[in-house]
Each structure stands twice: as structure tokens, then as C-alpha cells.
Amino acid sequence: MRVNEKFMQEVGLSAMPEAERKAFMDHAEEELEVLVGQGIGEFLTEEQMQEFEGIDDLDAAAAWLEKYVPNFRDVVAKICDEFKDEIKAQAPAILGEAA
Image (cartoon, rainbow, N blue to C red; front, side):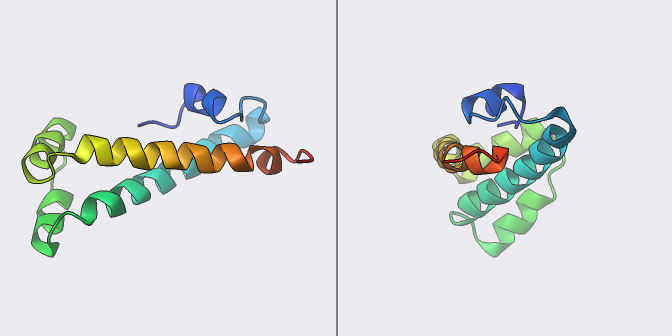
């Protein structure tokens, strides 16, 4: 899941000023990565987490996750949906609009 222009539209932030957009998108993507890592981490041992963190290739990481967390795609989708919902609820405040 990427925080891109489509994501911004989906969460109601397409009107965010350009000067703020890039920083917000970068921060949101970092936060989403942390949330996904925590969500997947619940299914892994400490040793598995260390092994996973050592994988640099995206395809290799996906294959590894398929092996150790077969439902990881569902976990990621659920976390992403919850993250979007949270941002949608905060969109007026983020944009500085009256609720």
C-alpha cells in the first residue's frame, strides 16, 4: 500500500495544499509501514522478525511472508483500511476545516 494521490483522494485530503502534501504523504506512509510491521509481527517469533528484517528484496519478502504468515495480505488490507478510516475521520481537522 502506497500513500499516493489516489490514497489522498480516498481519505478526503485531495484539497491539501501542495506545500503540505508531500510531507504529509511521507509521514503517513512511514506510519502505515510501522502499523503493518506491528500487525504482521504479532504472528512471528523474535527470530522470524529478525530474519524478515534482513530481507531487502520486495518479492523475496512477499514469498517469505506467504510461508510464515499465510494470511498476511488480509492482515495488511485490514490495517490499511483501518488507517484510511482513521484519516478520513480526521480529514476536516487535518485540512483546518470546521467539523
